[in-house]
Image (cartoon, rainbow, N blue to C red):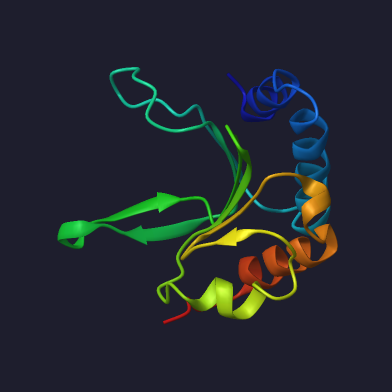
Length: 144
């Protein structure tokens, strides 16, 4: 299935208010980084078993895996989950960087090494979230 159609189907099948919130974030990301390659991961492994929530991805990043292998992946990810919405910023080595840099400006969110998770869009400052996504997307070097 074409990626844009898969993303549209995913979003359209979300319950409200997540459908509206994910749509707003997705549109803001597309407007901010319009040339980013789109990804859609259904959340299943090679056997078809569900292993994660579906993810919309934007851009490219090379992830360093255990054993020295690498893998192409998205740089920014967006996903609905059972308690809210997660925004992933991949390729950051310093696990405190996101929280130290954006924790005080994004709003009420749980920030981990590569994830900004919040319950509702109204709990955060969408403009600050999109600005963080823009800054991290366009960085040439990964944080150490």
